Length: 370
Image (cartoon, rainbow, N blue to C red):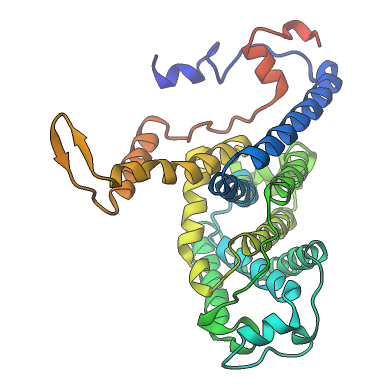
């Protein structure tokens, strides 16, 4: 079966006639609640039975999915080619870590130059620290937005890339706040399945609601033709600011949870390579598709680990092949090339999951029946 057939009428991604939305809203709500309960049960079973490594990778997958969904809002839905997520993730990670580390741990970490007051004198629980980190990151994005959105296209990418590098350089040199290249160590390991998946659920709730609102349709109109959207009365600048600020909030919170998952952070973690990975995820998933961003984030997280097998020594038809370090990145690149050749709009294109789509694909719920 050709891949292009999936997108033709009657294919898996084009199920044909769908029931009216007004008749399926209540059913969709019940199905969503049921899916959420099943997911919670699955996470509980995973936490009880899986190894620590699997649980850790599942947490990483959820955090990457949160970052990808947030990044997709400004890049895929609004169509603004920005390259700054590493700056927002770094801001959230440092703020959360500085707020939650105890004064004794801060004193032990800041060896070359003491941490400035009052950060050195108190610590707070993780939840309020995450909220503060998200709000500060959103404020930074709001202030960045004024100069950033004066330009478009490639110029916008260059400006946002510059801001990302500025934040990384500041983290590297602000010794009395970030501890410079030494970074922060001894961050409490608090992030678990419930924190990471809880954030993903909250992020999906708000961003999906936004995308399917009148604001979301305005964002898509800006993506298709900003000049035409403005001619229709849409204030493109403030709509882009809305998407940029909301995206930054969730990226900051995800950065805070990431710091409390890996327990140590330094400026080298927040280079452009992090942004590049997120860009790969949302392009492979399908620019503009929230479902595609989540799917690609988990494939990206687990795929990198599954491909480690190609770096191990193996016997192929009697031929001894030695292990080659780095070979998985070769395979990973070949897979990306194949995806971009055969699925040029990503795995899901601009399609998104919905219960109406699933039931219609299964031959259920057609003709408006709930």
